[in-house]
Image (cartoon, rainbow, N blue to C red; front, top):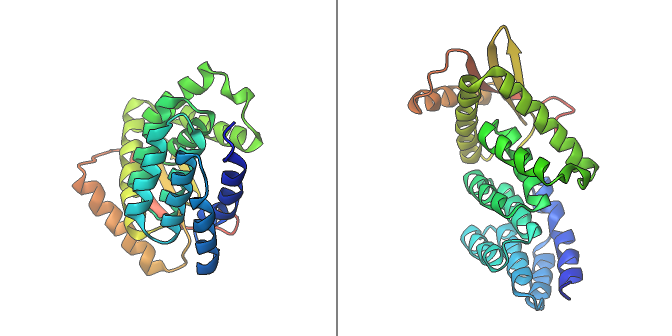
Length: 252
């Protein structure tokens, strides 16, 4: 085990709350102290990863991407590096890059990265990535090693997968395309990731994304934008729609 791991875990533990909450919880002074500690880490990819996360917290996205890319290139089998990188991209609302990074991570078959990818695929209703990650996870019997949170997320993802399989290839493909359009808008509008639900009634499917607002005019603008993007993308589904709705009190 690399000697730098305890220090790496300590620093990640201080950085992670900001990434998870979606807002910076550290003062400029604390960020400088963490940067100083990161510089002392001997293991290169651990150091680059921490430095990259701090760059994201300082809103230096290009530097953050460059450093995290160095980390995962140096040792792509370290799941934590991929997941921390993806979490930082999500924190900065760089959702297209997060999606690309998570897809790249799957080939290394790490437990953490596959759990992350499966959950993300479920959220964006991507049947292709859901099927791919499910096959690997089940073939490697990973659910036996998942913790409770990972197991719950995997179960939820499998419910989504079954719904899509029952709906058939055409519906699954349409919902996947709609999810990709929603992801573009979520990135542009810097929307935090909340709950997503799929409703089905008499063969009609709706993919609904909750956002943290009670501004009716803003919701209307978002849904108008979504409609325009769907048309521009050439999505001509007869029985699938997507729209935004205000989050409920228990959404997270």
